[in-house]
Image (cartoon, rainbow, N blue to C red; front, top):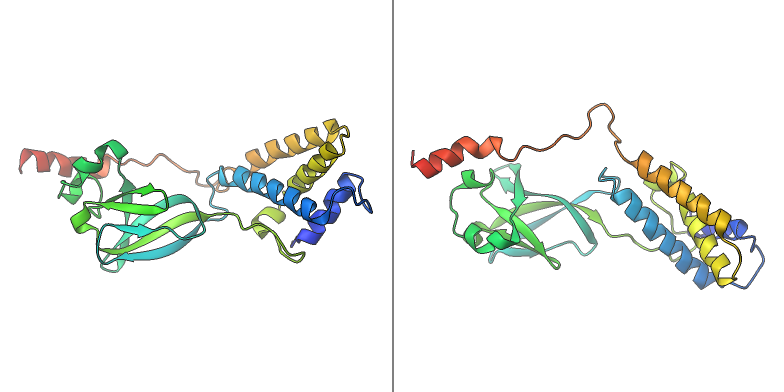
Length: 229
């Protein structure tokens, strides 16, 4: 099901009983709707269920950094290309930033021999002298605000009817401006938020996520490295 900005505006006005009213202007309605859209987007992103996750590739030829995609919001993972296969990179602790740069054995931390950290809009790779190569970023993009009447919400939100949260949010903002009672509509929005949080989680009920064991795959190699054998 597709839902446009025009449809969201109409439904918001209906909820606020402001159809035909000019008390709230069209630009203001769009602002309210985008604010509600932002809240809904965050509710769903926080489920960590990859409703919006995408990928982008970057290559380091010199130095030890590359820029994140312009639409970057949150990272889900970083891979390094070894031959024809990507392998995982892990994040290094900020307090270990200088210690890590002197480590040379890939077995000490991950299969690729590289770790990363995001600082501002840049990805830093250590060890710096091994940073060259191709990387794949798995990330959640930032929300793109709606502006034209025909702009559509992502179907990952509308196919479940979650766009109603945006309309309730916008209607509540409009009623607040009018200094009207928002008790009922605020309760409806909060109840819907609770349902969205609950139902957006655990998309794969067949095989739920498990804790990743970062130690076991490298523990024997680490011991061998420190023992010198």
